[in-house]
Image 1: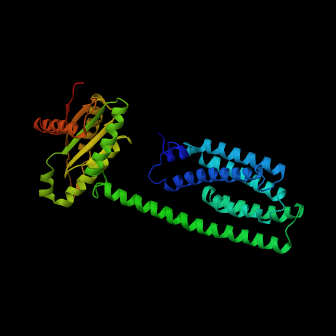
Image 2: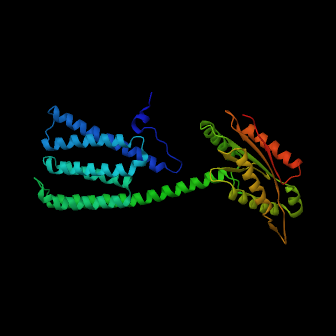
Image 3: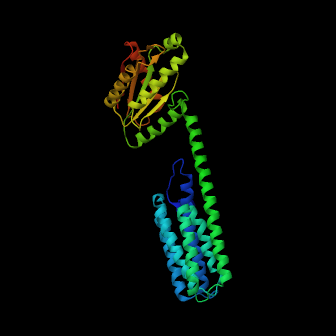
Length: 361
């Protein structure tokens, strides 16, 4: 049975960093439904004789309520249409407010709807749109007042225009500061997430973040019945480099190797540093032949690095083990163990080579 959230918003998901867009989507949804409900109650009052409204405006209200519900149905489950439907809803609202202004002259407070409109415009459409709508509303009231059945007095109109200007200016400044604060907070959170998930030396995924990413990629691969492969990369004789040239030299080598690996893999692949000189690469939608080709390219790139330490260049090599899987329920731990075994086989065969550990379906 669908929840109230699913009924209101449909099945929607937002990525990290889209918090404000998610708020706009929900805000517009509630605004549309609230507008339709309030208008429906007013129409019910007319039907029961509680209040009297001009027939033409009753028709306008019915159209507004119907369009609000249609726009809500159009927005439901479609966050990519947010901006387009927000502009459409704003046009519908302005038409309804103008209808009330001219046809419900007995209600002096009908102009208040223009005031309630300004904050929503700034929230949904941004500062430029908010300024435009604020100025257009002020101009429309100033020019159109003379044509109203019961025009507002000069003093009342002056108060209305000044109040509209103040409200627009307030939300313009507040919106600018709020968005600036939101952007800084989002960037700060992104930096914190990056620090928490990446190795500080190489900027690769750390072990925890790497395995969490692999679990997600395995789930997707199994859902789409795709093969995937894992490379286990271990630098040869790395301890000797540290012992001979110092840990600073070792850090230089690790950074160079990491950068080289990132240049070889695809954007969809995941690369993690899982130990001192040990790395793992997850290759989605990749069979044994594709994994072997990429691993051999990576091995050659590492060998060609020749990073300079003091006055000499070091020859760096790596042993790479490959394991592939297309089995349902294959865990990352299981395939990583087989890739590790394949890497040790490469070590035993003389290092600086690629070894495969293929599974049978």
